[in-house]
Each structure stands twice: as structure tokens, then as C-alpha cells.
Length: 560
Ligand SMILES: *[C@@H]1O[C@H](CO)[C@@H](O)[C@H](O)[C@H]1NC(C)=O
Ligand SMILES: *[C@@H]1O[C@H](CO)[C@@H](O)[C@H](O)[C@H]1NC(C)=O
Ligand SMILES: *[C@@H]1O[C@H](CO)[C@@H](O)[C@H](O)[C@H]1NC(C)=O
Ligand SMILES: *[C@@H]1O[C@H](CO)[C@@H](O)[C@H](O)[C@H]1NC(C)=O
Ligand SMILES: *[C@@H]1O[C@H](CO)[C@@H](O)[C@H](O)[C@H]1NC(C)=O
Ligand SMILES: *[C@@H]1O[C@H](CO)[C@@H](O)[C@H](O)[C@H]1NC(C)=O
Image (cartoon, rainbow, N blue to C red):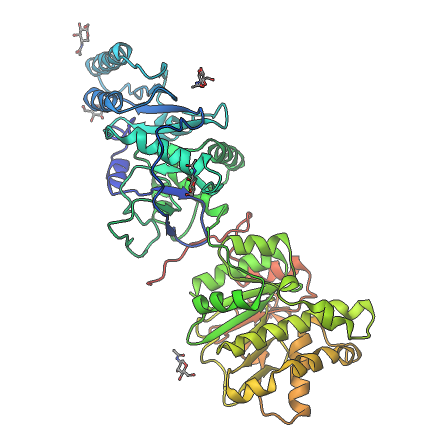
């Protein structure tokens, strides 16, 4: 916080003295920062000199000579080694011109700047080169940080220190170990690790966020937040951030992120601080490390165990659902705190991206070897895709039921509006609930159902594809329609659920309707609706909650 804390930014002082946290920053997920504990890194062999990287220490200072001298002395007393060059860059901000104050005050300031320059000039730095940047006008914190570095190679790292900090003599050894283990060691490397902070990790910037709980044995963990006290920056992500910032700032965009404490800071302080920009950047590049892609029934078991709620899972079909619709959907289920879902869809870059961001996903093309079964069908290719879709959805449902989970199968062209939608909204006197518009299907995991939903049932559902065609039923309704037909044929009792009563069909909304109404549990539309019409309707109904980069406009913290 060097430059302006004391004289210009009392608010920053206050806020940032509250512990801002972080050890490792990595890009995020769409909710409040998440942390993940890392294994201790192995002790580093001193015999292995490691790669030849350069560390640039960026000291940001302003007008506090005694802090600066304490900071620089601690840096020079630390333990370095002979292998890697460590250069010292000191950025001295200029005082603000203020003509209201008298000339004595001005002389004072000029004298103080001179003293600081004299001190820095006389300061001996043995571990590399010393470089001093003395500004001609007041830059403020944002520019001091952002302009302090543009990496000149992928083997150059920056360690940013504000002048009110004092480092441990072992700080460099720690940073070097982090660099060797998480940047240069291929088995631990992750593009999601953006750097490391030496700050005590306590700060949770999500409003009403839960306190962090780390056991005393944990020294390293991943966290979606930048620290401002002793921050090590990795070159590639920093460049990416600088370019992102440029684009967004130049186009007049603001780093607003509702639900974050930092949003309020930004509104008060605007461009004097930079962390809201970085937080927004991480949020829009969101990633978590847990890859939750399901490619086999065995993998399904462990993923469902971790997502189920009250032994119930929601399988959301992504066939014919566009990417932005899914992103918007995710913001809604995050707000409603619905976590017992799993997506199913054909292999795509987008599907893998969802999994990489920590959303449970079933890769339909790999989950089930359809080719064998599909060959036994004598249909034209035009319906083959639909047959595959019905087969895999029915097969996944069967596996869920076998694992003991009651299963909701829903079409992704919908938005839940109530958190109890998948709990007690519908009459469930029977083991099956089928939506009249074929958008929703509930199947209870009971011993009776397990005897019904067997391979023959799946096969029969798929063979109904021609009837489906004949009755010109939409592809979205494939399995739902087939299931109802079979249940009726076999005289198995089921409940009918009227989507139009419980839900809100946005296709038939009034042109001036601005809310689906409080009693509605979900909104839905046909996959044949044009994307821009869906979007326009959802904007009007205030259900469009993603920004231009398809990330949620707000984050929400829920009690754990
Ligand atoms: C590391 O690289 C620097 C600059 O390229 C060079 O001056 C130095 O000799 C190298 N050190 C080792 C140990 O290779
Ligand atoms: C001008 O002087 C007053 C009183 O000493 C001080 O509070 C104020 O911060 C000064 N102005 C600036 C821009 O530093
Ligand atoms: C600033 O330094 C000059 C030269 O050392 C000295 O004459 C002057 O009194 C100082 N002014 C203040 C306000 O300290
Ligand atoms: C790289 O990391 C792996 C896993 O932590 C470790 O087993 C290995 O010894 C490391 N390699 C080096 C050269 O440190
Ligand atoms: C959980 O499931 C049981 C059995 O179906 C039901 O009685 C109970 O009400 C459910 N709990 C919640 C919170 O829905
Ligand atoms: C919607 O607009 C129509 C025609 O402009 C008007 O008659 C109707 O009252 C409006 N409905 C509402 C709820 O404002």
C-alpha cells in the first residue's frame, strides 16, 4: 500500500489492513473464492540448481522514509543464492500537487522526496541490479502496481512489495521453492496458478461468506484472490491480465461484481485501487481444479455421491442448449444454492470447459458405447442421433436409480426459480412424475422402479423414436414422451405435472410482462426458439444474469 495510504487514501488503509488474503491465487469459479489445499511441496534439493530464472523485486514507495528503509533492509538481509539473479526495482510515487497548502508544506514535501531519493541512491544491493523509477506526478496505487511490470520473458518473475512491509529472511527461499515446484516442475504445474501471496489468509471478500477453516498443518492452498502484501506474480497470467484490463478499461467497462465486498470499495474509490479489476479478471476466467467429468458408470458413482441431496439428483440435458443459456442457468442454480445436479451432453469443448470449472458433467459420447446397441436398430441416420440421445439419457437414469438416487431428468432450456423446485413442488404419490409438456421427468428409486427401468425398457424407449417422428413431437421431448407412452402401455401409475401451471413458458409471455410471477417454480421455452428471442425475453423478465463475457453478474455466498 505504499504510495498513498497515509495521505491520500485513508479508506484503503482501513480496508487493506483488514487481512486481505491468499496464498496461491488461481482463477476462479463463479461463486465466492474457493480454496483448495495443496500437498506440501517436497523439500528442494540444494544440489539441483534448477532453472535459470530472474526475480524482480518491485518495491512501491511514496513518502515514508522510515518504512521504506525498514522494508529495503529486510529485503537485503534475506538469504539469496548465487544461481538466480534478483534485481531490485524501486518505484517512488510523486506527491500530489496541492496549491492550497502553503509553500512551507511544499518545501517539506520536496525535502522528503529528496531524502527518499538520497536513501535509495545510497542503498547497496548486492544480488543483482538496482533500478529506480521516480515519477513526475502522482500515479496512485493502480498505476504503481500495474505499470511496475511487463514480463520480458517467461522466466522472469515479479515480487511486489509495498514499503510498509518487512519480509522474513527466509522469504526468498520460500518463493524460489514455489517457483520451482509450481512453475518449473511439470508434475505440479498448472496454468491456473497465477502466483503466490505471503499474506496471512483470512480475508473472504464474498458478502456473508463463510470463514476460512484451515488446519494448522496446512501451509499452502489455492485461493481465488490476489494478495497485496508480498505478492509473487507469474509472467504469463500477469500479461494476460494486463491485456484484459486494457481492453476492458479502454472500452469503459467497470469491474463490478455484485456480492463482493470489493464491489463497494470500487464504487467508493474507483480507479485508485486495482484489486477489483484483478478479482473480476479471475472471476471471468473462472476455473477450479477439480475436474468432474464422468465417462463411465464407476465415475458416476463417486461424483453423484458428492452432489446428491437427500438421495436425489437432477440430470440436466444439454442437447440443443446453447452455451450462454447454460451459463445463465448456472448463475441461477448458484443463486438458489442447488448443488445436486449433473449435466449430460455430447462431447464438446464447452462440456469439457464446464467440467474443468468444477461442474459435474457426463460425457454422453463416452459414457455409453451406443454403437453396439444402435446397430441393432434399423433406422435412417436422420434419427440415429436422437436414438443415441434417448439411449444414453435412459441409461444414465438407470444407473442413477441403481445407485439409489431418485432422479429428475430436465431439459436445459429452462431456469429454476425456486430452490425447492426439485424437492417438494410436485405431487409424488407415484414413482413417476411426467411433465405434460414433456420437459420434466421424476423417477423415484424404489424396488418397483428398478424392476421396470431395465435394459428392455431403455431399448423400448429408443424404438419409439419413429412414433415420436410421426406424432411430430419435438426432439427435446424424446425420452419424456417415450417414457409416458411405455408407462401407459404397461398400465403403470404415474403423476402428470402441468409445466404451464407450475412453470412459466416465456414463449407465451406478454410483451410487457416483467416478471414470471412469484408462484412460478421455473421458466422454460422450446429449443426451437431463436437465441436472441430467448435472451430478449429473459432480459425483460430480469432472468438474464450473465454479462458480456458470459459470467454471472453477481456472486452469492451461502452458509455451509
Ligand atoms: C543465468 O542467466 C543470466 C542471464 O541470461 C546469465 O548472466 C547467467 O550467467 C546465467 N546463470 C547460470 C548459472 O547459467
Ligand atoms: C494540506 O495541509 C493539510 C494540513 O496540514 C493536510 O491535512 C493536507 O493533507 C494537505 N494537503 C495535501 C494534498 O496533502
Ligand atoms: C528543505 O531543505 C532545505 C535545504 O536543506 C532547507 O534549507 C529548508 O529549511 C528545508 N525546508 C523545510 C520546510 O524543511
Ligand atoms: C516434481 O514434483 C513431483 C511431485 O510432487 C516430485 O515427486 C518430484 O520429485 C519433483 N521433481 C523435482 C525435480 O523436484
Ligand atoms: C428426504 O427424503 C425423505 C424420503 O423421501 C422425505 O421424507 C424427506 O421429507 C426428504 N427431506 C427433504 C428435506 O426433502
Ligand atoms: C401490456 O400492454 C398492453 C397493450 O399495450 C396493455 O393493454 C396491458 O394492460 C399491459 N399489461 C400490463 C400488465 O401492463
